[in-house]
Image (tube, rainbow, N blue to C red):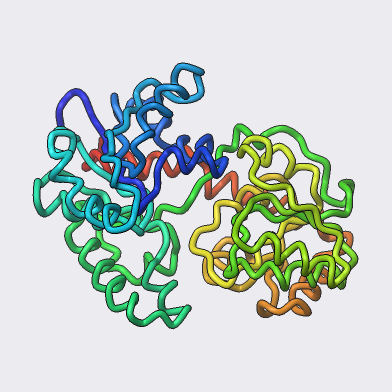
Length: 377
């Protein structure tokens, strides 16, 4: 490798720094890339995104001191974020931006969706490609019985694994489905422990209130969560937004649930607020490696999750959290009842220890270094 390492990051399909900013997650998503720079893994990080305004946004964030100056963004065409233009850019982008792609020491995709951009660059232009297997598209399509999409996502996954120079697989179950060779690593999600390192009240000493953080989407199973909270007479705050907000507000009123819909807030604000809640919920029909759950555990909340494969890999039922028997409101309420009692503080403490030991930024960064630079670097 040359003396100056440049890592090119391929954003997920259709995603942009502008969209991250709108969703309130830019401060969270940038962390690993700033760690590349701060640790000396890379001297420059280049973002391949889908919004023409991203260069201006990045410059504004850097001027305000909110983004590392070593991050640059490739200017996307005005048509790259809309309709067929987005699809075309995801395939032709490496050729249109070939100078940046060929000068990169290595490239890595941010999520599985859109990984074909890196695969195209690897096959067309050469260079080192790290396949970050962030969430399993084919498993989601299989779970949802979306067989037409599965016919695309399964071969894509196998091809990306076969053609990448290294694969970073987020979940244990997806890792077991690979060859498990030296160029495949189990690399879970992470959280910044520094931001959650201060002392917290034990959950039994906090207000008896629950919290959910994420998009207001159908697969998040929020209607059943709201109904379960109504059964337990537990107030619930929901951070995030989405197309179901109006319906969820109406449902909360119908079932008599005390809910506050707090909208999109900056990640640091949400992370600070989590330490004030006794309960954290993530009862989705589908999750891969849920970062929101890790943040709830790190904040010392009692975590109740549904038995989707992502949450079930993180939580050991009854030890450091509780898994519901299924996705129905009665089962979620039963899980809350199982977690309620003098043992809740011990569960929360074990959850915090697990996050510190297994999901730290430092551990994940060392795996990224090996994948991106190869060998023992």
